[in-house]
Each structure stands twice: as C-alpha cells, then as structure tokens.
Length: 369
Image (cartoon, rainbow, N blue to C red):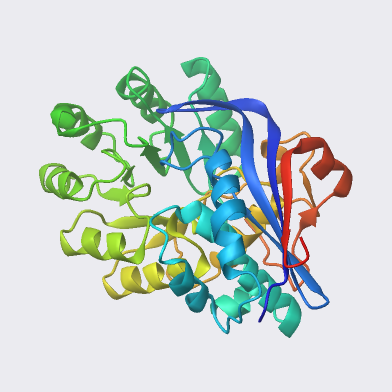
C-alpha cells in the first residue's frame, strides 16, 4: 500500500459535562483526526491525547505538529505491506506514540477498505459483541456520584470505574461500597499517588475492588512491582504501558495483574495486538481503554476489543454519554445488552459540517503540495 495524501485535523469537541481526573479537568476533548488516501480509497483514524500534556507527555497540539511536520512527510508515498513496516520506518523518531498511532491506524483502516475486510477480522478478532462498563470522573459531590452509579446499576452495566485523586478517594470509596456492597468496582488513580501512600492502599484493600488502575507514576513499573507485593488488591497498568518493551518490563517484574490497552497510547493497533499476545501468554487479562474520542476512534477500540483475552468490560461509551452530537457518524450506540457490535468495512467517518465546526487546525500533506 502507498499512501499519497494525508489530511490532518486538530479538533475540539465540547463535552456535556467536564471530565475530571487526578491530573485536571477537560471541558472539551482535543483530538487529531487523519484522513489518508491510497489510490481511490480513503480512510480515517483518530488519536486523542487531550488538550494538554497531563495524561502523558503528548498533547493534541504536539500530535498535530509531529504528524504534520515530521511523521506524515516521512512515510508519504512509501510502500508498506504491513503496519509493522510503518512502525519500523517511524522508529527513528523517539516516543510520541499518539502521533505514530494516528498514522499507523490509517494503514489498518485503508487495508480494511481496500480488501473489503472488516477491521476486527484483519486484527484477528471475532464478530462478537463487546462489553462496556460504566465510568465516572470526579463529581461535584458524593451524592451526585451515588446517584449516577445507581443509574448505571439499574441499567445493568457489568462493572463501574471511578476516577480518584487526593481528597476524592477513601471517603468516596467507603460511601460507594457501603451503598453498593456487591458492585464490581475498580478505581483509576491516573498516577496520582506514590509508595508513601501504602497506608491508604491498605485501607482500600478492605473495599474488595477488582483492581487499582495506574496508582503510581505514569512511567514507572518498579514501584508498581513493590506496591503489588505490599497490598492484596491487584494492580492494572495503563499509562505505564506505552510500548511492547514497557509491557515486557512490567510483566518481568510482576508489576501488574491486568493491562489496559489504548491504541493511541501504545503506538497503534500492531503494538496493541502484540501487547495482548504477551499478556495472554503470561495469564494477564486485558481490556480496551478510551480517550473520549469521537465515533471514529471509539469504533476502532470496539474492533480491537473483539480479540481473545479482552475479557474485562471496556472503557467504551455511546456517543450520547459525552456529546450532544458526535463529530462522526454513525454515532456509537449500545445494544439492549449494553454491548457494542463491531462494524463491517464502513467504519464511522466525520460529518463534514461537524468537522468544520470543531476544527482548530488543518493541513494537507501530499506530493503535490
């Protein structure tokens, strides 16, 4: 496959309610959408590292810049028979996994179009429905949180994830657990704590959580390994897993019992597949994560989650959960069973009017430019 043109968009998508975590608040989601052209075929990708470099060192602005200035021109008009070849070509550039994923995922979506093969089948997945969980960021009050969890329980969601941060942790969890004693529950710390918080984690041990997601530093595996030896609740790694190598390191030192896989964070779909293989071989379940993308990015996460070993309900949401109107169409919708169905060869694409409305920057990269 030879990609002859890239159209790169940085967009801002206003949320219905701000997304609050240990690292701050996002009133809108900043994302980068890429449209790739190969011959008569076009396809889209999305990479969403958020507005500022607070989740990881990248931001939507840095992704737009690196894709536009370095990465896309570097692979333009080269022949690539696999996504792995794109990764090898881009490996001269260090880090910047979200930017690399924006281009690597285009290879997959184009290959799906060219071969008329659903993306999940190209990835090695199955035509099965994908379970979704319910997630809640930091709320205005504990009562507000309890009310929202009750709605999720009444709807039948199989598990609940809570964002926590200093000042919104143990008391909140005790209130949730006392109200919902049998709820399948985990928390996401977004790297907001350290080994000095062992006493806190030992208290959390008493609350019967499925796991604690990313409790310590975003780039760490060694301290997570130490924490895992000191507490009973399993650890899930998210931000720390940015590559196949980091997954190998984490597994080697027993830093986690679960792994969250986000295609953008790990550099694309090929790396996602390989990390899943590593995890499966070592008895570690995985689950798909999301970055509140539009339906373009969310649908790709659904396709990935059809692979074996994606056994924990994913961070996947209907478009209406966060957006008055999704930038892309068709929007992502839950089935009556609170699952998502994988797509055929026609994945969601941006609505032209919504794309224009949300676009902050755009650039076209082609040999004719």
